[in-house]
Image 1: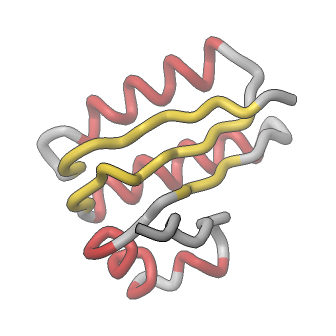
Image 2: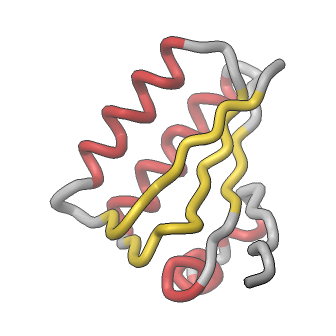
Length: 97
């Protein structure tokens, strides 16, 4: 199965999480590819954004497709750490600067 990379930029919060969800759902439904979310340009994510990513992950896994988060750094990475999500989500190590 092919891997599709989707870059996430800026801030993902309650105001724009539905936009991210909509875009990811179009991608998920239009292909049979695995999904890699590239967070190299992600500056902030709140619980609504994290919820979107976890929902997409759950949907993909229900269809035997992989979900991975890459290049998660700074404050967004800390949010995932505090929530203990490194144990249940495939999160790669950030690329060196």
